[in-house]
Each structure stands twice: as structure tokens, then as C-alpha cells.
Length: 217
Image (cartoon, rainbow, N blue to C red; front, side):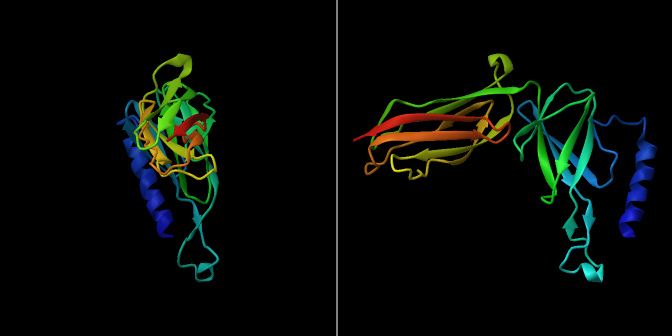
């Protein structure tokens, strides 16, 4: 009942503000909450699913709306010619006349990256040979359509493995800026020599790149 009252207040406020402000992002469903942030020329739209129901734990007492109900939210973007990516699913979302549909599951939300152009390619530049005990930075580059520079921030999952498949601590999660990541890497004195591999997965559009290099004593 309290939720219905609050949603009625919100509806009244929304009607009163019509014509007084321009909504950059809008959703008609009151159970979908949005927040728009910007970094490096890219907007990041946080979409929160607040559609809830009683769960199995205390649902019989009807005291807590503890279960998130999956739904599809229709988001309207005003005056935006962008390419949208669902960052949790790492997929491009279809745009139709300024509208896009966002799938919201039991995780209760997602992040949609709004790029001015499509993410097209990712490349790894690693040295051919790394001597044990020396630093050898590895460069990862992402580009937009047409080979243009990519704005914004790009989270990446990096896996570096020795010839036996053992993962190196220089891997993990890293953040590129403007499509560029300079990954620090130093082969330890006791690292296994031979052919190593590096795999990078882009956590925005789902691109993946691989490269190999030799570690020598």
C-alpha cells in the first residue's frame, strides 16, 4: 500500500514537471529507476529493477518484498544518436527511434554504455620475448568503427598463463581509458620459460583477443 501511495506521488510530480524540464532518459514504468553518469565522453546508464514480490523466506507473512521480478524495460533516450551496450550481457542493444529494450533479471539491474560509435576491434601488442626478471609492459588497444579512437572507460578481464596453463598474478580485471591499456608485466626470475599466452575479454561489447610471447631465462 505504501508503495502505491509513493508511486501516486511520483506520478503527480511527473505530470507537474512536464514541459518544465527535458528528460534525457525516461521510462514510463515506475518500478524501473535510472541514473545517468558520464566518463571520458561516454554515458553510462544504470537501470535498476525495483519490481518486487514476496519471497519464499518470509513471503507468507507479507512483510518484506524480498524477491526481484524479472521484466523488460523500455527506455527512451532524448536527442541521442548512440550505440548501446548492455555491459552485464556484453551485447549490443537494438535502438528503435530513440527507444531500447533492456532485460532486467533477478540481479535487479544492469549498466548500459552509450557510445557515439560502435566498438569494432581489440588488439594486443606484446613483446616477442621477455627475459626473466625484467619488466615488459603489454599494450591493449580498442578502436571504434572505422579505426577511430574509442572514448570512455573499458573494463577488461585479462588472463596471462604460462606453458603449463598456470595463471599469472598480473592478470585479473583492469580498466582501459580511451580504448588504451598499458598492462604492467614482469617475468619473475623463477617463472617457467617457454611460450606464454595472454587473453583479453572486453567487458562492454564482448570482444576477445589473444596473443603469445616467449619467456626466457
